[in-house]
Amino acid sequence: MDSGSTLPRNLPGEISALLSRLALPLVGLLILLVPTVLRLATTLWDSDEQAHGPIVLLIVLWLFWSRREEVKFSPPSWLGWPLLVVGAVMYALGRSQQVYLFEIGAFIPMLAGLLLVYGGWALLKSYRFALFFILFMIPLPGSVVDMLTGTLKQYVSVLAENALYALGYPIARTGVMLTIGPYELLVADACSGLHSMFSLYAMGLLYLYLAQYKSISRNLLIFLAIAPIAFLANVARVMILVLVTYHFGDAAGQGFIHGFAGIIIFAVALVLLFSLDSLMGLFTLRRKGAAV
Image 1 (cartoon, rainbow, N blue to C red):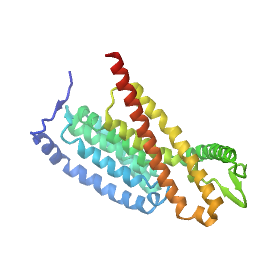
Image 2: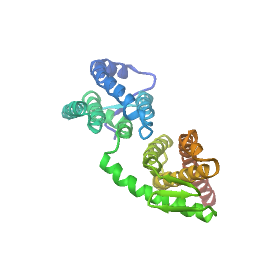
Image 3: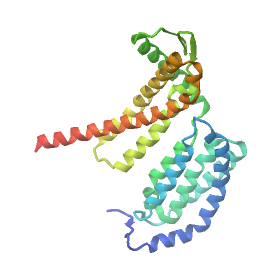
Image 4: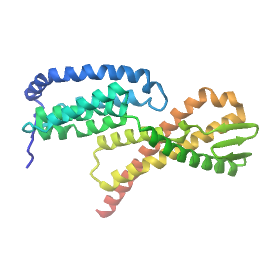
């Protein structure tokens, strides 16, 4: 039996009472959030690697708002207070030392603590995915980025070289440097695919959350497909930039088309992910039809 009680859609009194009790704490969180967002807007979010940050923030806010009439409540839990303290310490440390891992991550225990204090474990469970999604606002540690980026760049370079050579292009490779005709192109960190993979995981998990599939195998296959789709999409991106440079010159390859190619390839990766899901849906329907 569920310990929480589902809020009737036509009786929002419980939500109103909750918002009244949360008014002061939410104002406090807003006071902390605004300077963080302002700093992110002029630092991390101003880079190509973390440009997804504002979108993730808007999605998190939407996830909290969209669940407002479907939440459940249970007796308040005292465990929310330690979480609030932990979050406050993390925020103070992250803000003062400019450690985004702590400054942004602090909002997870602080929000979780508020939910526990005012609505118990049932309310926390109602918003567990929204809290989890905040993780995609946190930049990966530099050591992790450096370790993964170097490996991914190497593989991207090898595959791009082999594919273009098989198509008859005069291309050679030295490390992550591609030479085609008179041009030399360095496969930069942005072309490794790490950050687009991170963004694609965010969109893929959001898609699975909204789809609410009951099939574990379907969810797992889509989740596992995200990494190779993002990787192959970035191989295609590098190939496109190399071909544009070879046929139209270095200025064309390094100009508008460089950034535009990244946007197009990310959109293509999303389409491939959704197409895979559609194929799995058709396969499931056919299998059910055959069983009948």
